[in-house]
Image 1 (tube, rainbow, N blue to C red):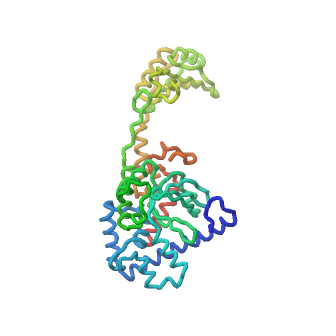
Image 2: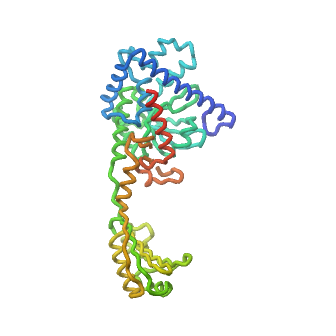
Length: 411
């Protein structure tokens, strides 16, 4: 059945209906397998599975692992209690599920689904996403309306895609995606775990439950590092800390007269009218050899002077620039202005507070997920704003948080 984004409308609708049926079947099976594992093997089996996963992964799972860990336990973990078969396969044999072909194919498809690092390449809102596995190079169009509304291009997900009768859907993923640059660390580790230098990690490794657990452990560690790394120090082109400053003056003469005096401020540009106010940009021209430090070609805005009918305001982004601008204004305007006060904003503290409020790995939906951030190429977003997964869009975080909560309730 066609699952490509360029299929006919009829084929797409038919495939979407089939995918929805498979997703419902997936949820029903997961609930049934949880209940059956408890009834047939007891709590001890689950505890042993979790202990084994922790031993192989080397990193304790968190809330963001609930979906992918569920899939690993039910469809990939093997033990003597299940005759060295995944629980789902062992249970299917006991139930003689082969008499129900679609259910048998469904279980086998889950068991046969290798772990992957899936990069979101294209999105068709309301329909699905084109994903590429960075471990195998395979490209798959996934029919999943919910994820198509929340994912962003170039995010990388860690988990399982299941393909049944030509229909691919997300079987289970870690709820914290990564940026491509961060995911590259995991890709390299994935090859190292498989002891291969080739781009394609062998299928037998990707199907091995020990390898899967180890790879999930690496993913968790990278997520932890990304979500807990300190924020970079913000600096302006002078190399000073970014600390927005606002100096306020009272006018002792008509605004037009004050503006005329401001023309003598070094770097002052011609005033611009904005309603009843005057805006006077103050710039400095860099030497040719210093161009690398400014993104404005060499002319850097170092202050902005706003003159209203009764007030004068000087806006800068560092203490040094504020002091220099105040001295220049007082020298140019003389007794036509009187200094009132300075207001400062601790930009670094504000950013750290926002970063902290976003949460760390596992604190929410794609991790916090998914805080709220992931990459350039995303509509309306930039790499710089997504370096921290704590900056993920709120709708992504809410959707994935709900998914994690549902999984926890089912267990």
